[in-house]
Image (cartoon, rainbow, N blue to C red):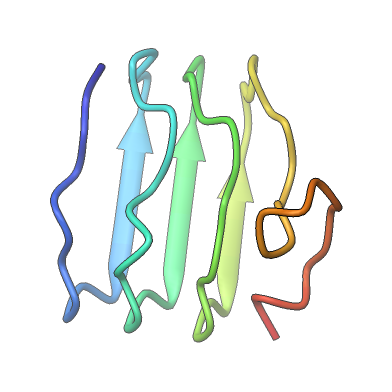
Length: 79
């Protein structure tokens, strides 16, 4: 399993062909641009409040956007 450390000042992240990446860290409050190109193991995105751009492909294990851990899917964490 590959993990990306918490990076509170990071504004842009591009991930390419990282099959072992299952989630983006929860503590990336400044992230504005996320580009994920596959194939990859990303399952979900949570709490990315400043996200302005999202590009994704090859989400082989995608499960969705969990809502406060109660099993629902929502985009409200990315206004």
